[in-house]
Image (cartoon, rainbow, N blue to C red):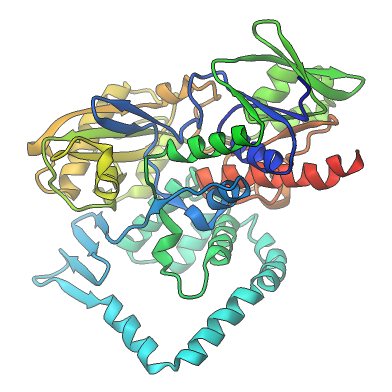
Length: 496
């Protein structure tokens, strides 16, 4: 059977590319060496508990790249959008319940701010015609805003996030939250992260926003768990005539006369196609699947020197009963988040302290995630694959942090497990990064690796490639696949 494209890897980059090509009428085959699809955007079902591989609160949702990929296939992915947010920084506690913002711990009495009343009053005082006109103009002007902003943002490609934080945030509590939030989003310490990525990300999600939309709709959790995203895209690809094989390893990319013409599988089978797209990692593709001898030395050196972001851990806690209404939260229990993160990155040491952690409860957003009457709570945090300490220490430290954020957590904990960087290394990625190559200075914007390789017919997608592709984690990977496929459709397939 003839194929128009072979895609190596069924992560969100590969599935995004497959969705765009299949929707355009191309015959695609996606080869995944694991027995499941989606990479870290996946789930497993055990005894009534749906356990996500990663702890994700996604950005863009149905309004961003996930929705774009699904719509091209005539599909829909439904998301739950948060109504509350909880944050503990040091000894202060903040909670937003969709109406009121309550801050406790900074004085004898809590500070209460009715956010929504203020917004409603502002909207009441402003004529609706003027409000609608302003929102409509903003939406129509976004392409112009993006074009004008691009050269300005580029100037920040060499400015670190630390420099920006030092310039604008001198309140320790706010500084610590911003320090951790940028690490959670971009997976590098603030002295390495390019501040331009924050600006690009804000523009992306501002572009996803529509007049009258609650901004919280730009973040959420997929109904049916993380697996709902890859499963929906895979179903649509198959309906369009595409093929997906799991448990199928690729041994090498076949290159003839300077052009990629197919792949050889680990079982010896060869599959030919004029387009080869790799979601297997740019370093692995160059060094292992193709071979460095097929590229110019300067290119292989550049690819070899790319820096990955940090790895991470996920704690999955099964609770005896529902004890909290938390949907999204952060716990930063220590007074030096920057020092904690640098101990991980520079010293490869896990500090013997409660861990900074991002928390969500999938069962509060989708009750089918756990047995009735129980609660599922997930926590995620940064780590490195080659830290000096034993990963076993992560569990108790995470539990301490969760008990600080969620009263009664320890007393109602039934059991938990921790997915460590070693777990993610089993996916075959060097250093087991959360995202891929780091969104750090020297690797963003025009300096981000192109999806188009020097070998004709060979492309890369995912968190590894896509010049000027930006965003956060899964959304960025999907966008990389869509952008690459759109380029192939307009530049490559238009020639035949």
